Length: 94
Image (cartoon, rainbow, N blue to C red):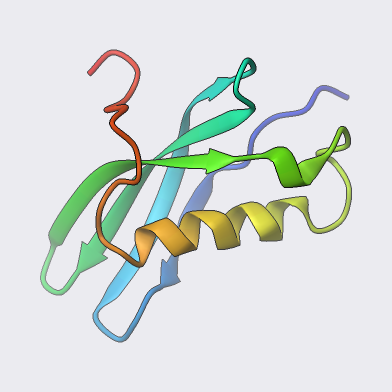
């Protein structure tokens, strides 16, 4: 079975007013970084979008093992919680 990066379509709470979702933008095999487009939802339809760079050095060679998705979620959450990007990369085709 081929590996596919997960998509985080169900909102993950940041605090009482904000939640995030994320979809894969790209993966840079050379640097072992994944780039996710994070959407932060707040209040009455307010939305902020930005790219989160997620280094994957911690994952080793088996990305299908237990804990990979939860660690990836935690890494994205750390960036989403700031409300801003952590990379100069703006996204593929943007």
